[in-house]
Length: 71
Image (tube, rainbow, N blue to C red; front, side, top):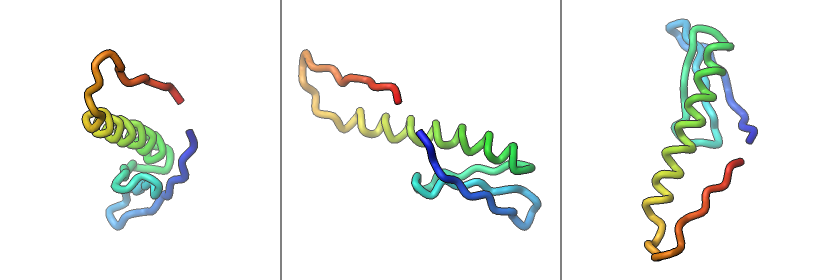
């Protein structure tokens, strides 16, 4: 999957990385490279957390487990 991110210099010298498509998905780094590495990890964690919320909300249907699809 592809996501657009923004890199913004903070007043304290850090670079803040944000993924606007994923509300609250923010990270930072000492430079652009580190900020991009960190936002990739944050995006993965954000998607995993949202998936876990969705799995918990699925109705329990015996004999019909959810199917996992890799993207």
